[in-house]
Image (cartoon, rainbow, N blue to C red):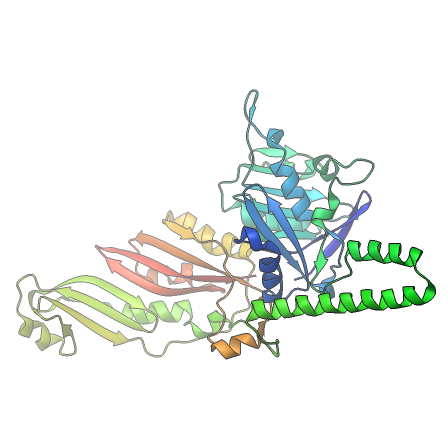
Length: 434
């Protein structure tokens, strides 16, 4: 995670946080601390929106610091508290839960923020140049179903639907350069600090005590501080499974172990049955992972006629169905240079749209952690992944695997399953993109 800061009014704001949903209302802080550690951060901020709670995770070595304010949290809350931004009808308004925004924030920098269902998207918090921010906007805009696009007036020149021109200062309603209730957007360090109550108590005691008494009291405060740090450390260890983190590991690069789409589709095409043996009908044909599977239905045909042609087919007990499984051999693998998701949309998805093919793309997901024992999990810390994964499906469509090869065989895209049924093909797989 790379963080950039901007000065707006009298506050320093930071962007580039990773946002994670919180699900335990009575233990938000504990859950936030656990997620901060899980995603490799050492700073966090808890955002309580309308009907949602999230933790924003940041890393001090990547440019963030305690007490900086989360720009995405402040802006998203301001939007949720301003239902009149997008009137739905004359004299009517409603809360905006799905929106994208690009806002000028000084020094030729722009902030991009994406909110879906009232929650900041995991990759919906970014500060960079105008071109970079617009690229992020375009990546997400193609997903559709946004109630509004908002931002600085120059952003609206591209003709986005339901565009709302508004500058950050107006949206945040700064008074004298200050944000109301700014502390709720401050980043906190994982390590414990002396609380305000401790500081006040120490000041009162020092004003009333002698030098020797003050010395002893400060020793007590120091001991209390160390005890608080240790207590929080133990709490964090308990949340992580009771063991200290000793080993850092990377998330597995899934596309390294999945066959290249062109290779997979070619081998799949080569396994498609040409004829149905002895009156048996091909019902379904599937290529899944490293094997193909053809399902035949007898419709009154004899089993021995099938086995005469396909001796390795497996019959069900009453010999009315048969399955022929074959290994997809000589598959090739490739270590792709991953594209951005915007590149995938401009290439892969645009080709699908040109074919008028039914398709769907899922929401971004974190890569799955590698398998490990309970003991290993206690002493393992996963480094943040630089990519996200998306499931996708194409079809039903009347194009064979070889016909779809030129569309689906692109960097960052892996087809893992091809299904033929009722004369149509469906293709499923994963997209790996930064």
